[in-house]
Length: 232
Ligand code: MN
Image 1 (cartoon, rainbow, N blue to C red):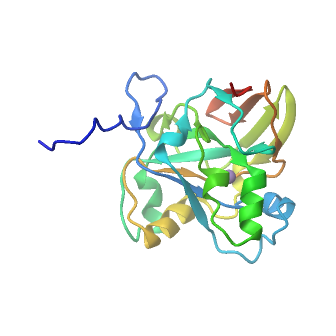
Image 2: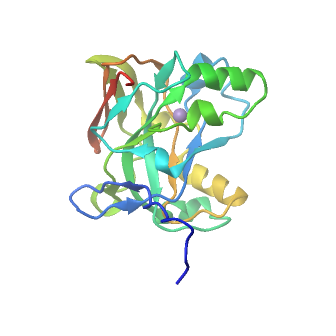
């Protein structure tokens, strides 16, 4: 039995629909600019880029229904509605044709972003880490097992803030499909059970303020609600 110099933290976890068991999160990968209209609103050409990924710490995950304090060091916190893919099996050099066999389930996510920090880093050629990977930045609703919902390749993805629709698109509009994302990632790193992939956000990203209530719906996966509160 390994002795630790202090008690290791409990693993980060995500809820599972219809179960008391929770899904242990190993790592969080996020694909950038995966919907053409969103790439354009970020000032980029969606036709010329291979997929690229960034990460968040596993312990940035928070459940549906969480009240999230407006984060520090930003004046431009943004929402990003996303389909989250949870892997139940890992691998390297995974074939696109077999990629979906590695998926355990799907959830609704919100890739919260300190847009001012992200864009300043981007424009200076620096890493995005502190713009993307801060406390409570990876909202993830309960996972729906593949056995229950299959593999959502199309269907609406919508986000509203205080009842006003801000993002409204279809999962079929992704530039890189879920199998392509899994195959691509697995050529660069060893994917593992417990990895989450945030599959990109459609157009319509925008700012949040304290007291905003964000609701995200994805066809077949229900909806999640997040409230932003004043930091103490
Ligand atoms: Mn995103």
